[in-house]
Every structure is written in C-alpha cells, then in structure tokens.
Amino acid sequence: MVMARGKFITFEGIDGAGKSTHVEGVAAFLRERGKNVITTREPGGTPLGEHLRALLLHEKMHLETEALLMFAARREHIALLIAPALERGDWVISDRFTDASFAYQGGGRKLSLDKLRALEQWVHADLQPDLTLLFDVPLEVARQRLDQSRALDKFEQEQQAFFAGVREAYLQRATEFPQRIHVIDSTRPLDDVSRQLEQLVSAL
Ligand code: TYD
Image (cartoon, rainbow, N blue to C red; front, side, top):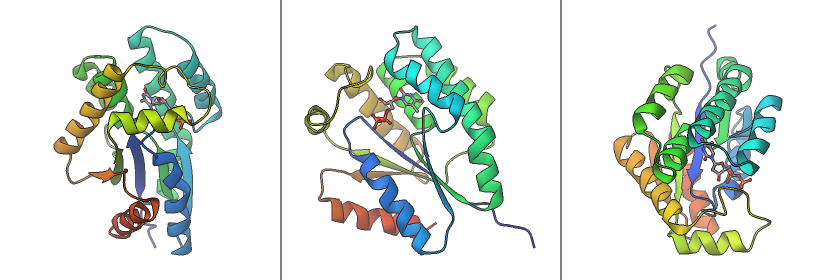
C-alpha cells in the first residue's frame, strides 16, 4: 500500500497576533483524530536552524544576508524534518514559513519580491503548505499584546511603519493565494478562533 503524503499547515501573522497560542491546540485536535502531528517553527526547527535563529533574532545584518539566512535555515528544515515527515504520512504544523519572508523581508524591509521568489524557487519549488492560517489583528492590538510579553527581539523592536508593511504584505499574499491562505480575525475570543481553526483543518 502506498502511504498518503501528510498535510503541511503553516501559521503566520505579525508579532503579537496570537498565532503561537493556537499551534498546540490544533495539534492536539488532529492527534485526537488519529494523526501523527509534528509541530515546529521558523526560523529554526533543526539544530543548525536554531543556531541561525539566534543570529537572525539578535544580530544586526544586511537585509539580503537576513533573507539568505532565513532560506538557509528553511533549506535545512525541509531536508531534515518537513519533507521526511510528510513522506512518512505525518502532518507538519510550522509556526511560520516562506510567507513570513515575503511579509518581513519583503513588506517590512522592502527586499525585492523577485529576489524572494528566486529563493523560494531554489529552496522549495515543489513544496507549498496545504493550508496557511494567517492571524490578523490591527497593529495597535498586536503592539499591546507584545508589550505584555517578555523581552523583545530584533524584529519585535521595529517601529509601526515596519509592521504596517508586514501586515499589508501578508494580506496581499492572502489575496494572491486565496485557496491556501485563510485570514483569521484574531481579535475574537480564543474559543471562537479555535473552533474556526478546527473547521479549517478538518476540511483538509
Ligand atoms: P516568532 O515566530 O514571532 O517567535 P516568538 O513567538 O518566539 O517571538 O519570531 C520569529 C521572528 O522572525 C518574527 O519576528 C518574524 C521573523 N521572521 C522573518 O523575518 N522572516 C522569516 O522568513 C521568518 C520565518 C521569520
């Protein structure tokens, strides 16, 4: 019997949108339905990827270096974790993936989309998420949520104009890929959001 490929789900949104709160909830929901689920994150997800994450979140660097390191970490993540898991039939949930590069390095830092597309083509031409949950909140709400959390990393310390660009680029991606990307209004109560997420992943 040929094993069916597992499903690949990604969570996206500006910092403070509340996506990370829901990753384990969706994973638990799927596990109760008999799926083998792996949760992971970007940048990171592998030993080398986590080293790169520490650099990316805390060191100043040229914006192209930043984009290249994001995709270097992603290359490793796909090779070591994502692709083998999907081939085994497991489901993979990643807290961020390539849409984040288009949003942060593209919309936030204004790196050309052509360069990002070239990197995407190089690193994962034949792999796209089956479903992307884009957690969306107004910038002021996100900022408030962030201020209540821990010490801020390099990205979280950016100004509102940066996040406006990030949010706009995410919403633009959602318009471009309406089949894959679902915008979640993350200002609603947690339970309402959880129920919507369960419906969306059930439809897969
Ligand atoms: P985040 O996912 O928000 O983790 P935490 O909840 O621990 O803060 O942090 C990752 C940061 O990396 C986030 O600010 C967005 C940024 N990022 C990019 O700029 N480009 C990318 O391609 C990815 C995957 C993340």
